[in-house]
Length: 226
Image (cartoon, rainbow, N blue to C red; front, side, top):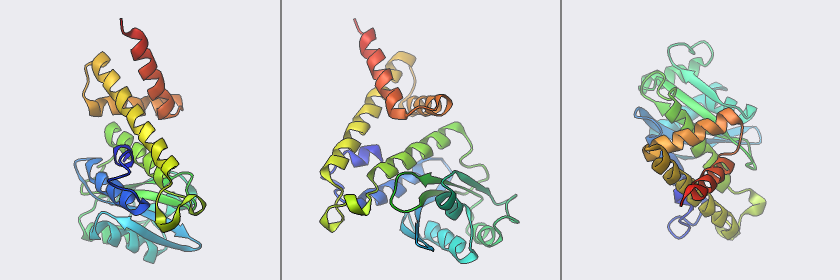
């Protein structure tokens, strides 16, 4: 999503960026089969964008039943996961719909700093599809990036276009993360996905912004050059 946001000419409006984001959700884990965004408008939850019918159907199953991990994440501003094998009592309506569609697990992460309570939802075809460190890290980064480009109504230009200053900031962040990944690849002999996982792990364990860590990694890399 950072890279998508860094190309304003290719995706100049909010809806296009969000559609790119939920499409990227399928790459979070090997068994990811759906991605969507849930938003609370007053007392009504709705899905402004999804990667397809499966994710939309599962979101709406939660709205109809009156509760579910996507609604809880948006409402409570915290991470929620779901396991069809153990959470039937907690979310019976959603569990039935999920099992019927071959979904065995999901995670929902709150989108911070948005005008309305919102969450990104990821659906998996296996149990514990998102439990490993890398899927957790990538999902967290995707949520942060969506939060960055999701415009508040007061900050949106006519026609729903994301202001150029917001896009420029997202572009700078994308370039910063890429530079930090490259520095870690060179210094640690790791792949780019592993470099991103390392950044996200440090961000969580040290309770620091991933962008602050990326600046530190790049600065240290530049200082180590002869």
